[in-house]
Image (cartoon, rainbow, N blue to C red; front, side, top):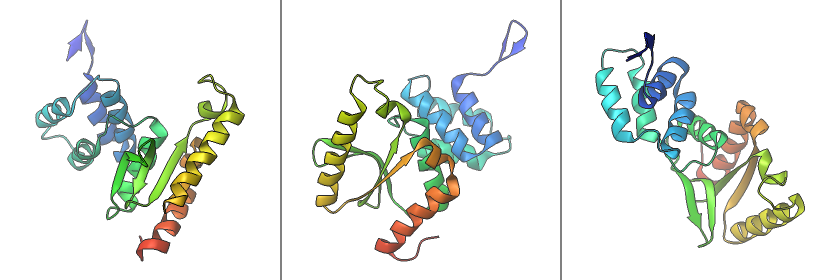
Length: 182
């Protein structure tokens, strides 16, 4: 598409191009964000992919469409989910899974391993609550989940960026419960 002589793309094409050129994790982050903001639908993505059938990178683009989820609440959550999908394809991932009636896990792996991805804004008063209050609520929530048999791991944005370490920690926990993990 061309606007005033400048080549431009639509949001669906942009998401797929990011997957094609930068890989599945970055493509999933962009696509989850576009879905959440209602800039794109999975129908739009499939339509755009059909137009790009001779373009390289089809596997990454199809994988993004398959795993895209508009309920992701942060780019780090989407990024961690993408890394887990790539590293542990046998693991069942449930994003934003309701637990114990009133809690939602950012990611729940195999029905027992809860991953929480905490952004800095959660603890800096941005949302109108004092950091001490937020920490108390998080401890209460984590205790309730652990009392019901869930294992809870927390990652900050800097820990998600340290990809190898985050995946090592997740692998270690998955290996304790489910046997051998890649």
